[in-house]
Length: 480
Image (cartoon, rainbow, N blue to C red; front, top):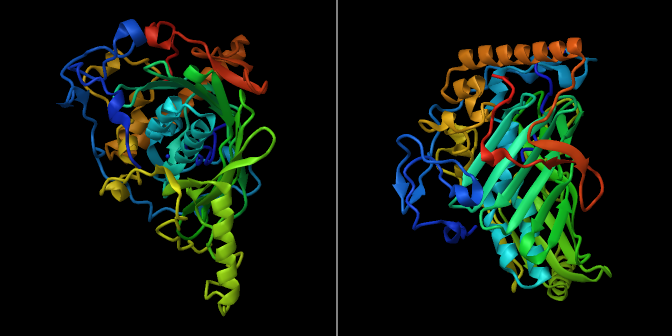
């Protein structure tokens, strides 16, 4: 098994008002990289000459060391046409199609809008908590908008940790399986208000012009104060025009979020764009109680914002809207004709705003991306900070942390030749380690997660074994 092991396995990267300020420990001066009171959370300690501080909280970088490498000289089709009949997961892709992040770091982008979890924890009513949880589930895929670069496939045993005192959480993930590729993650609130965990293993389908990634694995959010657990699975992500034309992304499918304590359920429909692109990015759904009575209607776009309103007002508005349409003289839409199967799918034009129904409540709004985002792989400000490595940090991180990967670091620094060479070296090292285990008839042992069953759904899952933040990294595999 040579080459890059999984093709587009990570296109489902797991990317408003920001109320994160109240979770900042403003009275605690930080003099190094992120510092957490070890008596409470065993976090990263003070090291070296740290980054600049503002009100006692670390300031993160706002740009990458080097701009994005152009992909204009590369053609996916020139690669795929040589691989007809081969298993999709064995196709080697040039590094130019990557973005300088591991898939483990992309999963961490779930946490960009973590204030929604904190808000849910503070809500006294279960209906209001479900509204915030639904908004969090939608916000988790928002960073994927226009992100057509492919994250690096995690090596077996690779890890990633992130501690953000200002946002009130810490996060750890591990690549627990290589075939099939499975990434497990666990996060907890620094104020003991939530646990967030799951395992991700997307199932890929290649449709000729597009790659569809159907997410597998359960996502679980526990609100500890309310003794509530919510579970769901992300929508399907599709990357169009992988052969020819401009790449574009859509999310579609039904996401069901279940409150296991109350029986309340939120059903969200991520709409496919449709023939003329009218439904592009739209999300519509509702919250119902255990007797299936609709309690609340949710609508918006996963790229922009999410609103909610009571069902009676929503239906009244829609009836008036339909009545107005029937009275108006209409003519066929002057939209593009259905694309021929041999040419690129046109990128639909989307409306910039969501039509807000009077009386609606804003549940979530996407963070504005930095002005230089297009030159930085369309990263959000949160994403830009994920791979920064401050002086002395390598002494504290696990030796398997993504930040220490030389191929990702080389690409981030703009050295594509070095990145490509290191990527090939790491993949060969991984294959040799697999051959060595086969000779010794030894099975791979995960370090921070173990196989088990989800405590709420009973389905197979990978559960956090604990101990990572005690920072005993002896015995960690040498994967770099």
